[in-house]
Length: 216
Picture (cartoon, rainbow, N blue to C red):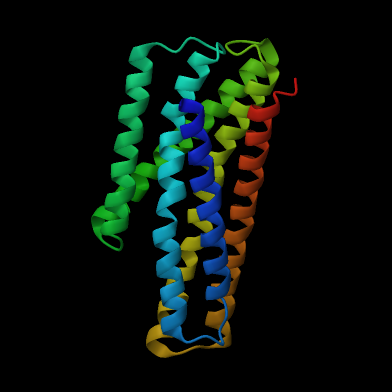
């Protein structure tokens, strides 16, 4: 059952991200009305909830699989902590979405960025340590999976960082009209974001390959 849930999380993560990718790509089109482009971005923001929530829940579900498959014995206390962190993360994601643009959402965004940075460094360090010393994870494929999972946190950070500069010129288009400079700024921000999204796709695909085939 945990393996099934793990598969569903991958589906909702990667599948929904494709929808976000397409909506953002179409939002660059200056031949569309501002209202249409704004609707596309609003749709992308809603669909983006699914990969974000899947990402948050992936960690505790993964810990159950690690224990059940005999890779490493995770204590019940650690599993409980992982679920509490994941649930708190999901609440943070939902509140940030509902209160988007508010001071609270900005503060929650800072908290989430700090968490993503710390968690990313932790998993990258854990993966590197295991690859070099075969401890705490002796399986090379799983050690590499942990390292790449850590990189996913930084890919998520890169997406938000690259997308943020788009808002000011895009809103200016809505209030003051389109100009080549504003359109170029919007396109540049979205293009950089899409590069980060593609990087995330590749990481997730390789992680799924390692977990499925266990090649070494």
